[in-house]
Length: 622
Ligand SMILES: Nc1ncnc2c1ncn2[C@@H]1O[C@H](COP(=O)(O)OP(=O)(O)OP(=O)(O)O)[C@@H](O)[C@H]1O
Image (tube, rainbow, N blue to C red; front, side):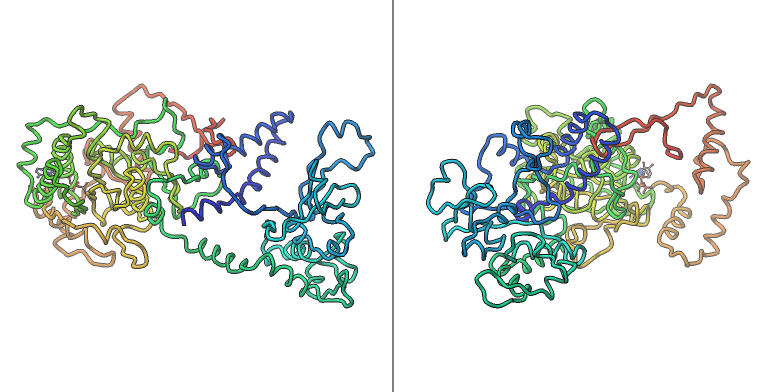
């Protein structure tokens, strides 16, 4: 699949893209040189060329060896024409019409008038003949073309060339579709022969027309002639077309890419979304992705890996000692694994999902695990010489910036340089791979906090990315994973699929690998057991389930007049407007001298891929 996709990569969108660039640059520039430069830049940025192809081209190495010639046959009514060279044009008069280079189709129409050439359709001509120049004109069986168009020679019988032509959809563009069939497979000397008086369209001529071929003594249906010639050149075209269509529709899930080619990730799509000025794909685009910056810039880009959290050893010891039974269970399981790893016992990868309601001590446990595991794993042989904090052994991450900040970690997007759109196919790291690989090569454990916000596509992407970075086909590239969170809390943005929903048709990393450990003891309100228990009941309550009288009474006790509410306690509001108003009032109470600073808003220019400062800040942006 990987190779097929690589060698059949499409460039179909490029023409449309260039058209837009040309239209825009015509509007923007008076100077043709600038216009040309802009088009060239757009072309070079948009064109998808892999690193391998670049090297091959730059070094002039043959990209492929082919025992057959491959000929492109232009069949469009308005096919692109190239002008003759300047040196030629300078010696012609203004009235001269002979200013265009002749195409293969022109040469076909001027083919020799021998019986053999008369019967040839354009496809035959392209596949079995070659235009010869210079000394080759003196070769065997070379014939002159009419109208001084050059010379032609039949190819050796066993080596007809492969013909390529633009195929268009029969449903969407019937006229072009039938025009192509007729031009390729009906012998002719002028396009008028293919669109005759009684047949206003190519389609009508194809379906009801008859022609008498040179050398034949009776007319024959156009359809039949087309079929006979087409069968010579398009033997399996329908099967191939159906297979391609099926492949496009049922592209494998993201993971398959990595399973097939984890090491040689050369996806060319890295810059597509940067340059595409299209509407975001709502299902796959991650909204509000914090710290996301696809405009990598050494000066402005925040480091992917934050400074690791450090704790006072005495405090840490106390934290370990005070872990409750379930917390301790996970903590020591991970600790044992780390010890085995350091001793060279190569323990199996583990995948834990630490679940539990609000305040059950999930983040607290993460901090303990992180500190202890980092301390032990830094003794791994590869780290013994110099422990570099930029090469962590445990990765602390979360989906949102806030959650990541709370645990002194990084967001998944920034750490793994994930693209904004998670739409398949998987986008590799391209030339950032080495840099990320060197940063994360020593990582052994990945911790993901607030996992309820991680969507299925994002999780699959993390898996794929780690496979790429680690160069391993094992799940998550061989790293052990601790996912922490509560699926009763925030779901993924934009109604993306959450991890805990099982779908049998997909490879489900979550169901397949993760072992759940549920923390039940509420640590945040441990001095108020009644309240903590009520919170647990509310956590699992359905929308239509009534609150019990006792719970209602307990909650009602806390109702108070807003004016009586102390200003310095946490306030929660239903709308942003109320939040803004409360913040403004509180801020004014704290500081008298307030200065407003307008934000500078930047927007990506789809043509250049660069961030351009907007004249006006966006309204309503926060
Ligand atoms: N074993 C423990 N000993 C003492 N305090 C603890 C322990 N576990 C957790 N805590 C404290 O309980 C409070 C809640 O813990 P924590 O924030 O880790 O819970 P959480 O499950 O992550 O909550 P949430 O889901 O709301 O983010 C914190 O103040 C934490 O320090």
